Image (tube, rainbow, N blue to C red; front, side, top):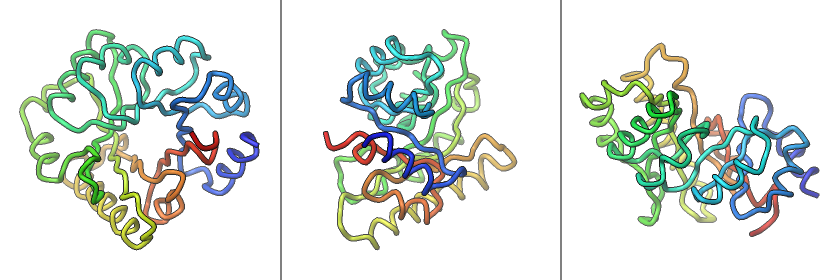
Length: 219
């Protein structure tokens, strides 16, 4: 069942969109099953769980952190994390850069934007993101690489609302690309779309989708 679903999704999205298999709360055996079918990108949202899974599973897995990240937890994932989707403050950016430097790495990150109606979701607004990118602190960071943007749409059945929120994120990406990352090929990712709305997200320009329940089943 799991194998059929992931192959079905991969076939439907094509090669230009990256699939992050959201494995949070799922046992190592389920992750290994998906890994054995060729899936190398997995997403987790709890640091302790991510560290345990990283230690137990093959080392060629690309681990993505997709949850809200506290600054005091960065040090635990800095040695191995492939991409942090949830960079939402200058304070967190400084800590990621600091821990990346300690590990002699450059850590790739996405700027998380608040595009949903729910206040419970985290994320930057455009003016704050611009202020960070224009700051002296950011200009001096050598161990962090901003590779794009991430956002979560409202949890709603209103597809038009979801579509408009994804359009907003795509617009933010283009503004940042034009003004801060022009001719920088590494700034390329728009991480948007989950199990319930990934098709809308892809139509609106997503380059990376985060799918959990459609692959692993409901939690």
